[in-house]
Image 1 (spheres, helix red, strand yellow):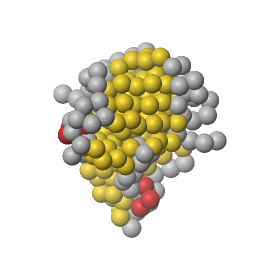
Image 2 (tube, one colour):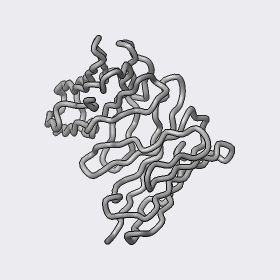
Image 3 (tube, one colour):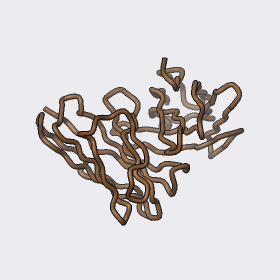
Length: 109
Length: 112
């Protein structure tokens, strides 16, 4: 069993829909990260959080430490949001990241 | 402020060869982590350098080695290349090892 699990693996939405991607982890963490990866490889860090909730524009990330669960929400989705969204947890003194397998999001106009 | 850069963008090598990949950290960042991302998989942690010293290592053999320079730029060296080493290699820098990591665009290595 992977230490970081994401669901769904693939998600297709219509423009304007509210989107939720879920992440569960089974290990102790220093922080949880949400990242975005576009085709071609570039990874952008969206959020780093260790408790509560963070918001940036149309993106909201929440974490429940007791339940070892985090969600990434996208409000008013747009085709430019199409990408792979990856949940990763920071572990140990190095804060090395352990990645989930990602959620491929396609937002159709 | 310059972001994290990596070179080269793409590289093709043959089995048994050696390769060096380079990463320039974001200004002010003293920590660099390297990751390997095989096609269709999530990235896997290779190692981390902090102030020119290796600060942690993932489950990779010794033929994967690295360096960090006084300006905090970094190299990843892979000896005796194998076909399974074909992947996207990502470096990420951070101002310290507990902070947000900023990723470079990656180097895509193909081993034939």
